[in-house]
Image (tube, rainbow, N blue to C red; front, top):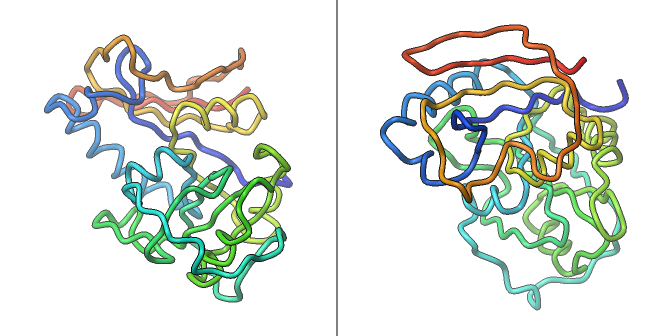
Length: 229
């Protein structure tokens, strides 16, 4: 395969939502714990999230002052030091502000993951100067938007990723599904119905068939494993 094997690993509500207040309710706590346990057990080369998810989970909206950095040409930047375990941000316009080159998180499934930015050519060249100053690798995968297929081929060829976890949200999950780049689903279902405006597992999706290959009931939380057929 020219690209990494992709497992979409998510906590969902009974009605298939992946964002919203239900994630912070007591009833969802056990599902979240199981999600992190599986995340560690899968032993991937890292995880992929969109800009909104990365900002909410890690960067908190901080952004560098770009006038402090030199403008760089829009070509891939891969430093010599690669860790083998990555936090891959699909960040079309380069809007994420990182204060370190690796994720600092108490959960061992994320801690010390080396950040990799996937960008379009719409990014400000000074943002590239900032990323290089930070020692953060980046690749380009499209002129105006990110082409999922191109991005994944580069992630395998240039970074060496063999298996990655796709961990939302809805928009990037939907983009991967439409690109035929979801090989497996790993769903941890919280025994909760979400609110009507919460986002679904896949946004703007197309019809794709999956085969259920495993079901587990852990303390009232369903863990479902599907493979793309």
